[in-house]
Length: 246
Length: 246
Image 1 (tube, each protein chain N blue to C red):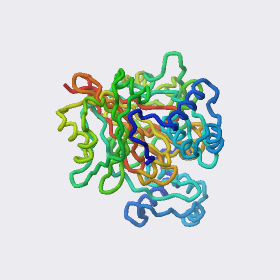
Image 2: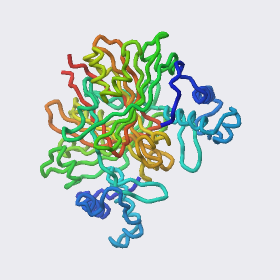
Image 3: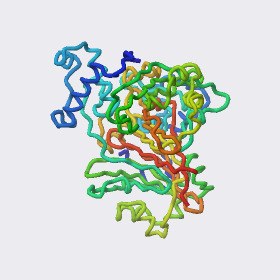
Image 4: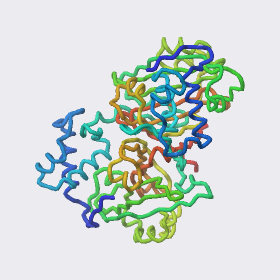
């Protein structure tokens, strides 16, 4: 790790440089998408060694304010567009401010007689077919998620057409008489986007995705849907709800 | 997105190729760290177009079984070493199987009179100093997390020495009379590792980290610690606990 003095104040040159760059990003002098000067240029400007500049920039990367793209430099990121809450009864739409406009687009769907073993298992399909939906969601025109969801097909007749018309899964399920469902399990991982995902989400090559795998059930525990939603990490942050068990 | 026929079976050539490669990884014919053959080689072997092979490999990337490193190829990943549970009363050690051996190492610490504004705010420091700990944790010798944690310094006198001796935060806090604390908030993001993080966590350049920011409080709500823990995404998966509110 980068060694640091155990000084009582905890302040050091790299922190002051990071602070100055942070200020320039915040006040718009360095707009979203702009390239930071090179380490060499920053070292000259601040009159310090390149290692000190490197530490300051690493700090900004760690905060998500800038993003290093291999071979092309360091860029000011867009900032979080969406905070996605993860809880037993939260819906994606809960997370978007009232002034923003969210849209969902159905990319593809299929009835699968034999989906992946993991899907058969989680949905307890036992020979029944699954409906697979492929969708992308955007907030104010910026793509924020790419979801692949499997439903127990016979529980949701006509879901693709409803979803295409209404642009919301929760709303479509309501039309089908499913007025309530609960999150049963959620796991979170992260990885690089594939080329197809980068295209769907309008991301640069090598972008990082948060991958949320979830199982939703009816209130009585009957499995309803299982799937994975990929969120661009530069645009979405997950917020976990904690219910305190007294 | 990659177009797919809306066939009733949902099976297609790329899925069969992915299935075969998955089998070869599972049975050890392709060990962890080994490089997959090139798209060209795989296309020849299976007698298909390169696009079909690309789709199969993208599927394995999506599952986290292999990882593409730009310019050098696609490699079999290590697989999940640790499932880290996120809940109101879970501890990191909860997540590790009984047969595994977990170790924590203190890399650095400092008393900070003026930490970052975010830390002052979350810990309600109001002029009091913070203790910053830098630590790395490993399971069976593989690094699984790199944490930066700030504590309200006057609540935890001597914590660095205790942590260094005991190798556990929970155990050290117990020695200080803090027998219980609860998770108050958790957010999850993801990004590329910095060079220093890659070194601490023994990761290749460009590796992806899950970043968990959390605030722990005493049972009465008094802030105790705030920090960020970075988990290598190829080694750790987060599992969110859902407490159902009836």
